[in-house]
Image (cartoon, rainbow, N blue to C red; front, side):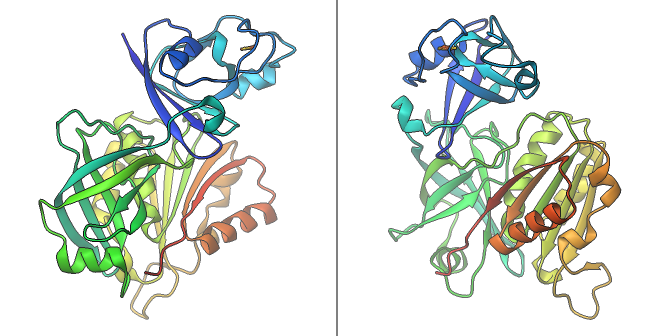
Length: 340
Ligand code: FES
């Protein structure tokens, strides 16, 4: 049985390729034009070293001078000795150009739906069609969309998991006056063709072996919805707590979808926080970190994924450092929203 493998690199590029059952990972990579740096091919030089971010795998021989038992616990691996047992994702701490690897691909998609889902947010549904295009990405990554009738490109995180029959979703923040916002409000129609470039980004769901804290600021929710879809699909048994912060309660969106994860992910919890609410708001107010459950964060190892505007991400990093929570492994994506 074939598996699908993703290689992601320090420059944020991700490449996908198929691998045959029991095949050495390096052989499959080379056959697909990804020239991972290598030397010995025997597990003793360490040149082809990477880290498995998700999926099952085994290694034939690993010299203990190259990878210690602690390295192996951290899922570090040698491409020339690895055989994958499931779909899997690997990370390499060098840029993709070292492998002469091609970058993200260009696609054409068709608008199948667009609707406003909060005072400041729309959701755009695209269909890549069934004409041989297949867009592989990791849950949490993003695409750059070319706005019809313009030369402008804007970046948006997938709000769905990969493998969804080529159906894509993106949460779009609606600005008072912006190229994409104006297109969505004034011209966007079912049947429009939109070009996109993907996959992009180093923010994606890793191997899930610990409780997860997901933190979304504004339309940063999009990437985390993609991760939640994947967790639900995989029948995740780890506790998952989503924190979702917005400025005003009218900005909250996709609440029914979020509530439904409680029925799909057994350990799912949800907390929403409004930073600048009206006097009628009876829910949590202020900044997200003020509402973290410290028992949850201090109880063993935790993976935290944060996606939102830079000030929100920075405030959470600062808060974690002040709390000396070394047991929290942080992954984050700062999205700088275009003002036009
Ligand atoms: S090429 Fe030397 S360890 Fe893989």
